[in-house]
Length: 251
Figure 1: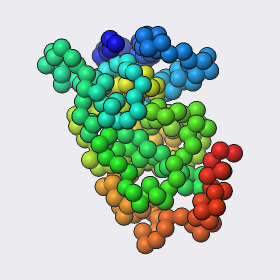
Figure 2: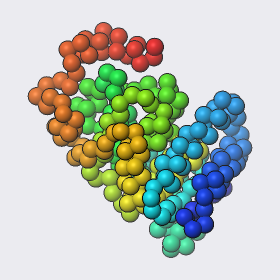
Figure 3: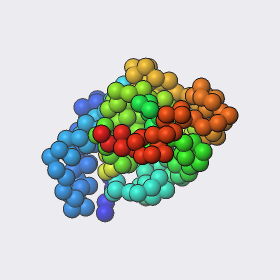
């Protein structure tokens, strides 16, 4: 299966150019794979792609990034095999795809009451078990965000709830990679540009990025919660124990 990529820069590209290329590449890859999407699925995919492109480009400095098509994948480790590697491109390697999982940007969204907790972390890291056990996974399908299309733009553009962002301090590397709002597309962009784009998006949505060390104690400290015990309120824990909390996510 042939994979394609393209480099976009401020001097040579507009948002319209980037969006047109992305949608064309998405259509090519699903045709190649024999995948049929409903009109509603294509429409929602288009919206997520556009939101993500706007997030990446709508920054007051030059942009330079790569977009590539890809097959659907089921994990960060698998997705990393199909991500554009800008270092390989600079070295003019025959195969420009494949990055370390640490340079993949993993997105995990949890819920507490009406608030969403969005964790951004390296693809080779897992969410602290204590955080994961106390914050249930959010039902993102209600926001029109499906599995493996989660990124800051798709979440913040779709949710009208409070979103708290926690970025792992070890998210590093000159370039980062993530999905482009679609299971069939990805991007690679400089760490510096990504941070500026994230800061601007959060500013427009009135949220802030908390840098934390990935551990439970630092999370509850930055979140202003109680580190001595459960991060649930008494009523919240009761709802979780008896199933009401889970049901409320789907109502």
